[in-house]
Image 1 (cartoon, rainbow, N blue to C red):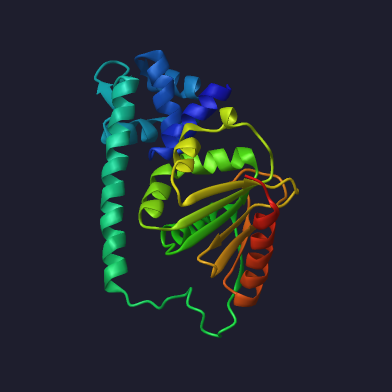
Image 2: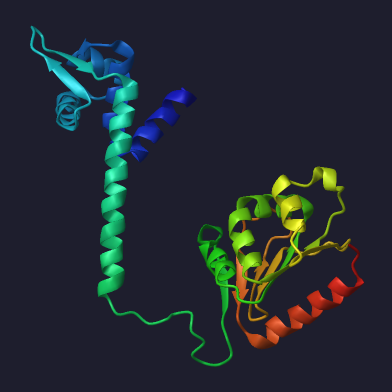
Length: 259
């Protein structure tokens, strides 16, 4: 039942309605069937089945066999999935074009600009962490991290290519890791980054939260003590008083920590 539910969810994600997904999957199991038998297998109301079958014919996932009574045959499941994926990809391309046109045609203001001169304090939900990536991508001089060892390995593996580009253009990256591990436990990406002169790591044995400081101008501070790097909210701020206080704290901890 769980597999069936997951299959329905996948087909819905690919553009079908729940009823269309149930009927198509039922037919894929039956091979060919009458509308009545398909409705029973799919657990779809009899008053809905012929409408849904007609919709699936229109999409191209089902063929109608003229007989007494009429029968219905699905195209093979792998072909159907490929067709749905192709359709979704084409829709995505068109949506990207439309989004680009909107971005080019509408005049907008920079909502991140510090208009009051004191900066902002923003709680960023875990689903909006593109803000942190955008800030890191735009770094000009420095990025300071505080991660536990496991989170650091995950982050530096995921963003290895981006960090290589940052290091190559002279951005200095410092890591405070608050859990001691041997290099044998480190990811290959992390070990390669350690070979770069601008990439430094020290071990800190204090239990401190995850933190990112970019160019000594803005920070991302985790609001959850223990969690992964991408499944938690962050406090973002470009308030220079707060950034400077935390930057001074970071520099102090960095000086007393060991390589």
